[in-house]
Image (cartoon, rainbow, N blue to C red; front, side, top):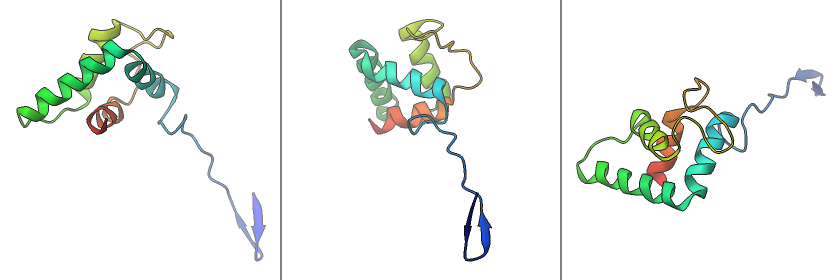
Length: 96
């Protein structure tokens, strides 16, 4: 907490992890971008969705990730974790 002009302000705690909602979400996308075969697979899948004018969302992103890594990332993040924000992963995949 700090004082400015006689008023108190509370600094908002940064609850993100390297710009991602949390460690689990960051870790999944780290591996998808770092492993060449995973990167190529998700880029191809996103393109197929775009070609068919379909929305590539969280369900599709989760499917691609699980196809690449099975049940967890190489760092041990379980892909069934409720902490993973699949919509954020899908958004990043569409933007890459």
